[in-house]
Length: 355
Ligand SMILES: *Cc1c(COP(=O)(O)O)cnc(C)c1O
Image (cartoon, rainbow, N blue to C red):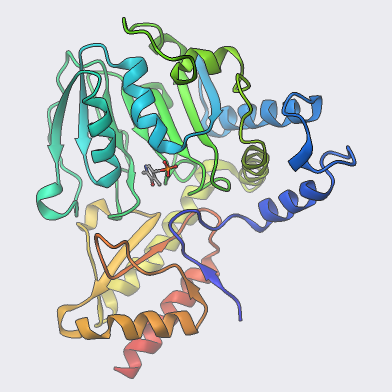
């Protein structure tokens, strides 16, 4: 039976990425060696990193003055690297969920943190609006897509200070204005590559302004200077990331990914709104196009496990909701085909007809 992969992360990759990665595991760039066993300093692998940097710049339309890094440590490492490198006195943070809360916790180790707004009071089911960002903050940090709660800021906020964004689960799914940001980071395992690499975009002019000493490995300048090769980078995930980037470009770039992602999300949200058994969990205007969270309506609450079993029997994988929300979550990353969304909708309709 065909499986439909809705995992939140690590998550579905394009068949092109998987096939090309498998090929390179056998024979990388006609070296007669596996990509698993070549030096990261070989000219063949250097070409991989160079092209991955260039394609990221092209796809995200980064202007001059921005560096693209491929680092280990996950997005979670960036929760500390950002304040280590940028927070001198005070930073502003928007609290929209678990990941934002983790970022806030780390920032507090380095200076004053002004949490400008939080939706924690209602289990993060909306994005706060009309908050005020202090003009004397070193930066404003937010999470563009809340993977766990299924909310998303799909428009760059207005900020009087430069912004830092955790785009782990929606990078390459929407067009944004990079000039508003000093740092953008994204763990690759949501929309790009296997787990192990984090893409970090840093603006040159943002560096070198804090007075504290920074350990070598945690200093962005180390990795900028060495082109992500200060130490051994995650070679295999970087190779896969390049394959995905090539695919995105060939398919029409980020604007085309966005068009497809909006179309897929609309199909699923329309069904959630129509189906008598289900209801969405977040404010309509803040719905994520990447992670769609829904639950059984109260009258049908006891059917939750039945639906999960039924959907699983029909090939749906990874739709169990995160433990802090419950219900269901379908992640519709770029690599997920529209067919899979239509298959999930068909399963929801069939289950409704039985009840
Ligand atoms: C998954 C995720 C993280 C954590 O990523 P790691 O690579 O596991 O550290 C952080 N932020 C967001 C928005 C995520 O979705």
